[in-house]
Length: 282
Image 1 (cartoon, rainbow, N blue to C red):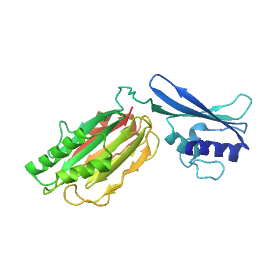
Image 2 (image 1 turned 180 degrees about the horizontal axis):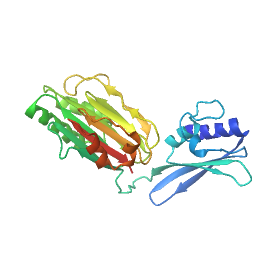
Image 3 (image 1 turned 120 degrees about the horizontal axis):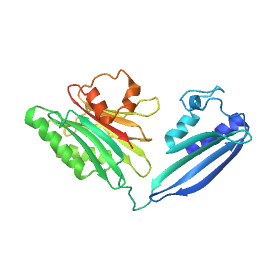
Image 4 (image 1 turned 45 degrees about the horizontal axis):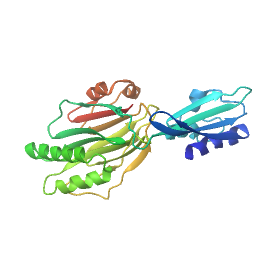
């Protein structure tokens, strides 16, 4: 509804009106809805610029088309025969009981097989995938034991919500030095990511478009003291890159290269004295 309101509002504000058509679409594994907004205005002189956040020729905030693209799985802007503009966008979900069987993300972690006291977890579950990184606190065996305990819980309960997973781990790590955890649960049904980080853990999304979004960063230590837990949910598009960092990472000099390089190359480039997990939406 929000994306439809955005493109319909653009037609009303900038082109003097138009009309919107909704169509049901389907393929072998998915069903969805296609929204087509059409007007007979002057057209968009620079479509590429119009898809950038903040660009506007009418003094608005410039979030209409970029915001709609973030909310939808597909979006195309084209000129209409006879004048005007057509914006066609589609939102998909998998059919009930059907799973494409294809990986939802390409991912890599560095260093391999992992830094001491740190574990990366990428576990597929029906309808989604859990992407997580944990760092055990304390030293030596205590740190590794905490990381291994968290990894075991995450792998065994991957379909749980991130908040429920943190609570499970908190109970299992009672009377230990604890752990830091970064969690991101990606739904393959509607391409939405629910995530949070607890402790010294950085979790950020680098969209294929210019922007960086960070997960809620909560103070505390899982197993010792938890703040009130809260997670955020946001849409994820194909090509968006998720980065989780435990410890220190190297600075990103060329941010565009982060979305262009393969996850394995990005992880190796970023890793410092900790561990980096990079996952990209397929």
